[in-house]
Image: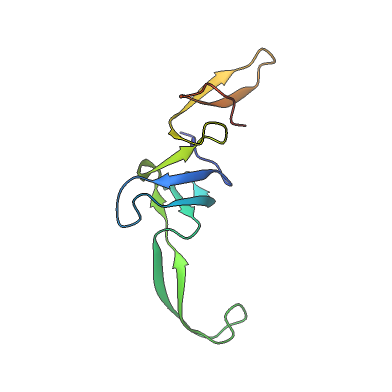
Length: 105
């Protein structure tokens, strides 16, 4: 089963401690059905100094959220919406906003 949410989509969180927050999707994981949203669901992690984190210490990073807890925001109507799939005359399958019927891809 493919995800209807893709990388670089803008989403809003529906439930949990980040409810109402908006952010951009950084990573999607179809196998786990999770997404990583920029600035949402932050957690603290203790890191040893390494090449990426020279200082080490406690860093804050995003943790994954299940896709059922986020909803895509349509770029045209700027509202949280469900996503439909439509096949164009050319045979290409595209994502469509259920509210304004605008193609999202």
